[in-house]
Length: 58
Image (cartoon, rainbow, N blue to C red; front, side, top):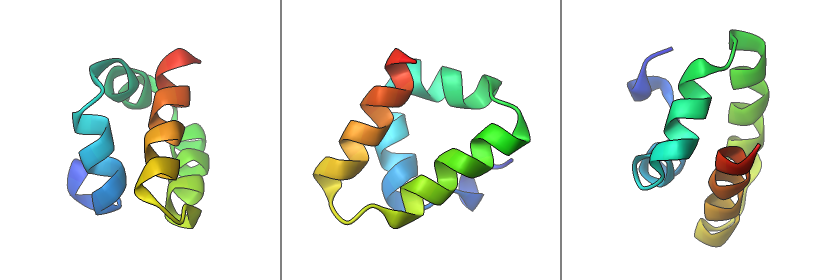
């Protein structure tokens, strides 16, 4: 999966959280798809930050 395929807000939030980016890169395609589905459903910048923060901690 290429970074250009990510929702813009998700890509920007990942760029600000190196741990989350590394974990996302290591996920298999099914897990990435689930995260992206969630990312596409968030309604605010704060929600996106929480999603990415949680990703960095799992």
